[in-house]
Length: 100
Image (tube, rainbow, N blue to C red; front, side, top):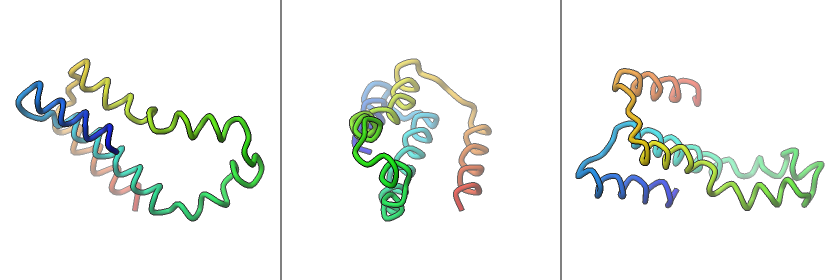
């Protein structure tokens, strides 16, 4: 969450404004992180804990997870990827409908 917020602030500093595409990408990833924190109690019944214990994949996932979601936000920032506003609204509405 902190890395995504830092990337949005970097975009504001570089461009003297914000990119709606970057805000949506960072916002949805922050929402995903908060959702996983809210439903953390279901993690104890997941495959990784029930069957794998403290195996290789679990350890690797814990070390890589904080950085993997930020790749999308960073690529939007670096390559200045722009999605038309009508598509951004459709993506946001579909995310809201599918997450409820």
